[in-house]
Image 1 (tube, rainbow, N blue to C red):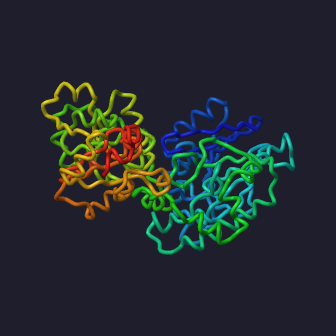
Image 2 (cartoon, rainbow, N blue to C red):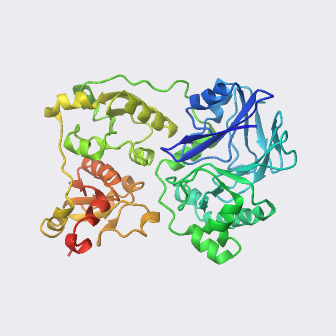
Image 3 (cartoon, helix red, strand yellow):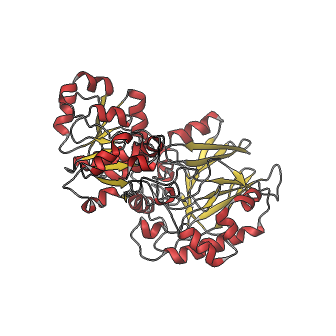
Length: 474
């Protein structure tokens, strides 16, 4: 058996290529929409990608399963356990080239056997997959591909249908199902490898580890959510508490992944623009500045949104840009532009009509707007003398780390829908841990006519001041 984990650090997402070298065939599980990486990985191993599968209908990225049925002729394997509401509604060009899996169904590629297990809770239709290399150990599964059910250090959150997809009060029944799925793991051996769909940085849980794989025995010893499963009330309180506010684009991903992801074909190849061209489009297009916050603040087209190529890029872009809006990118060179394009198509933001290089922007600085961040040492003056309002844009699962006293909460993934709560008659100062996400929200507020600035360096820089909190807020 051949196994390869295909990682996307930007979304903390893992897809899995599993193949039988003797049969020359491979399957990929939970691929993202830009499937060229999966096809290249299979080709590099001398394998033909004949199948593609999903663990569930994803909320954080667009699935590449439909794309692979179109481009590679792969057979699709999806969950048939979701009932009418959560069974995929799309069909391949060849209608018979899709299988709706039920609990206990198997996929076979040569000596590799993959058995579907219904593990609901994160979503109603969720499947996990037991992987057995029958050439090595015919009756002994080697690993479990757990999707968003079991993570390293956590279980998949059961509240997303409510918080992201617009449902009401489904989280309680989902949490009970998740607990039952967790308890059912008791029948599986400690040595079983755990291959999850996400790691640290994903919004699909609140305590995901940064290690890309684990074993079931290790998770039994260290995973708090899993350890609480035998105690119903404690489990329910823990799994439903302090989950991060999901990005605004999550609901749209659920719908598209269920109903049919638009076929992508080639990645967009936006033309290089002059600054004047970008300014002319600024009224209709979203100008996304992918440079670091300090470069954005030093000079950007009026109305541009700061969206640095950081771990939070997709969450920021997907929460600030409407899917039917054209996008102009500002990037520090071709490589950064192409990285941004790839990340955007994974969340369905395809309308990238052009880009501006950083050097081109610098050469036309007269047309740019400058926005200075607030230095931590100046924060008391802004709050006391200038009457600024202070907003903390971090998510709920980050609040164990203390923030600046007196700050109101404005989670960055939801800020676009909460600006009616922001005072428009005085300056706003935004704070996050390092200043990346706060500058994004500040730029969004400025584009809506609010005088907003980010706290330079965020909480890390603020805490570095002598005297800590009392030096900044009295």
